[in-house]
Length: 147
Image (tube, rainbow, N blue to C red):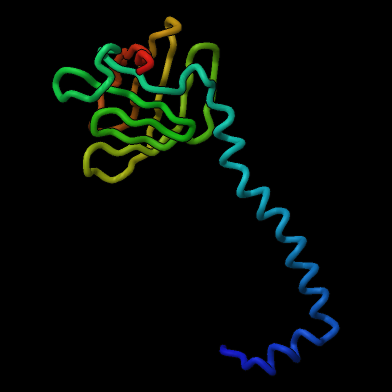
């Protein structure tokens, strides 16, 4: 329903309009806190998992059939034709198990589990579980050298 300017001014001059303004201000705090929640969840991703990893750390660029590059971000990962978005991480020592929504190529997103593990400071293994297009076998990557 459209309101004329005079109708809006009348509504603003009513005594209960102050109560509405207070109510909207009290809603602003939970809304602002909800906006921060993704940042809080992202902060729980261990820093030693973040970054670029490659099957050939000297050549840290995707080369189909030769080099695969894995990029782990606070909220997801990408590796050759695969993209995943994480739920909150569940870290146990050097292993990280994440509920995730992933896709491969042009396929729709589907639910499964991403597992990342660190055997050495410069090595990471990635396993994708529950996706029809993936194998449960882990793939190992080395941290890319700084360029």
